[in-house]
Image (tube, rainbow over all chains, first blue to last red; front, side):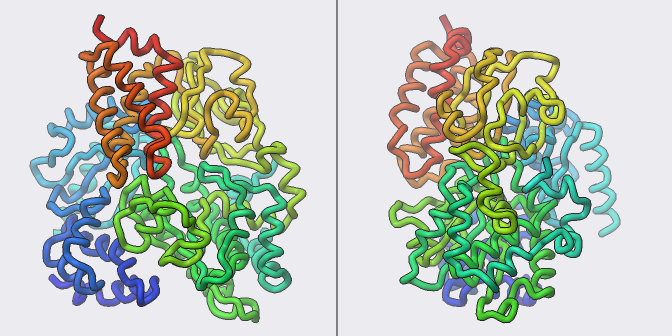
Length: 168
Length: 419
């Protein structure tokens, strides 16, 4: 898969945001683009971005490693990222996470058997008044799910499962 | 009192272009570009007493006046990286009153002669960025952004840029590095951004809430703004209230409102959950020093402004007020905050990288039940050694809850360690 081929219009729009002598600035939006389909940045995309921006592959890899929303390994189709930071924890986020693990039969960091959901723990997402909450990172971008409980979460997972069935 | 920033709570559909315009929107920007000199705009903001809302409280107009006019082009960057645990105000502004924020950003750009401005959003604000992109397109279409605005020779473009999950990018020089396509690690200062910022060019960086004040200040005048709040801290502030209160949320109040009003006021926090008492307050999110309350009326009756909160041994910062009730163990609280800072330390300076790592190990020991009093002393010692030696505020902030937690709530640690 070539980014240039699949997303030529979007790449053009991204590059237009920055002065042409500073096109390196485009590395972050390009990485978001590169992991849209598979949920992680593969080696070929990394090489392509490096070439596009005249930087080394190592530099691109260092950006992927630094920021938590970029991934270089495949995970579940959706990463379910639960905030367990102090304000959320004061409103039951730790218990929510524990129960969710029990319901899904996985530990934090693991993926459900059907490959649909990887459960992750993240730091503050600026939704402290609506805890427990999590975001899903998946093919349709990042979505917030607030004022959640385990039942509502299991319902959401069912919806995601069916949505996947329709796509296939 | 009508809202100044959270105006969408008074005016339905304010996020819609026509509604915003009908309610006076863009008139301040148009008036500035067509009738005022850039430095006159800066003077109004200076006279209003507006201070930066990101946490540091630096006078906004003064910051703008520091822009280096011998080096061009200039940039303005909006810090929309809102990531402090306990802070969720900029998100509400951008979701529900996005045009007032963008107008403020446009006015600031005119004041410092910038023809390009960037909004740096935390990567998680994916949906918020989509809203802003839509609003920017509407402004372009209506002639409020683009070339030769209102028939003058002033041109301006605004772009959004999504980060990808890094608290450190809220630090302004780390934000600039990130915007330049690098790892978000802070720069050594000086030079400061108004002389050496984005791409090495003079740059003004302000918080989303700061910009959102600007159209109202220009429309109503500096004196109008100064009449609200206190002599030290002019105007209104959005307090993000979280933790053990009945009604967590954003509340816009004049500076000088008391903690009691915010926490117990029926229209605001409506009291502590299960009618417990307040044990401690963290007024600036995870970066806070812990204010000892233990039900003390005098503390609860303290007015919230930058200077007065300091008399309680803490900083108001971004006014992300986390309420801890008498069931909360401070030993657990600092375990949470240290884990946060350990995760978010960028690794550039040794003090913070190593310091947060070792603080994490020690607090895990204490919190896990295998710690000794010696561990508590060691944790305090490590935190104190870090203070004053970090490259940026993140490292300093990581120690605040630790030192004040241990010193102000020693009993929570004594009971946690092995005898």
